[in-house]
View 1: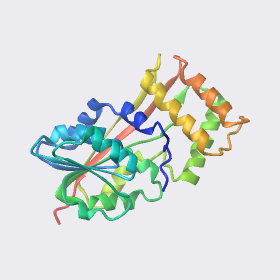
View 2: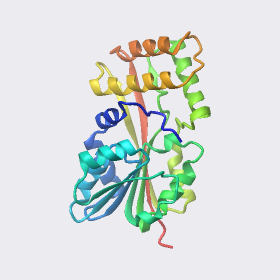
View 3: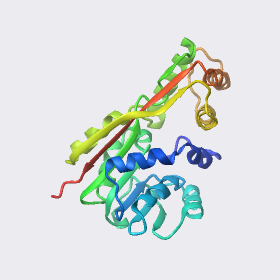
Length: 265
């Protein structure tokens, strides 16, 4: 599988868009506590792994797992310290040789595995100790909630997302499926929280502008989209950038956090 967003600036994009306060709030809400052994599945640059490790403290242990050799190399260099280990693995393969954990965290991963999502959750759940916590976090209506764009731009965005679903296994509705994954696997004490990941209005922050415009640039360059109303991906990209920089626009993306405990049996 090739990661949809792979590009020379992806490490920078992931670093900039990761907000420590959000990670801390989400992890505490799901039950992460000091002294736990935690696995961060799809750890990317290691920034989130480092934040989670602060929460488990020196008596805990944190493992970051990612499929990218480049990002694991960056994680080791930037965030390596006693108590944190980073490994490069295909997270679709058996991971049980990595040990057992009290808490497994998988954030913004399932959106890239529409057809394999349940099997992937089943695979990482095998890493948990009995009564261990699995925390899944993903978006819903991903990239589809904007107001203030033209009918032409809205139709093109919907068409592009539909083509990503078909060709690249992308799932814009991964978030709404998280509860079902845990329920089907027999998890207990399942809870969830719904909030906003993106909530953008008025003057756009530099980090949000970089994140969204970079996504449009990468995807427009990678895929030969059929974009109704546009003669080229470049024309689409320029139209989206003009819309996104307009302080009258409104953009939001629902974030769903779901967590539960593995059955003791």
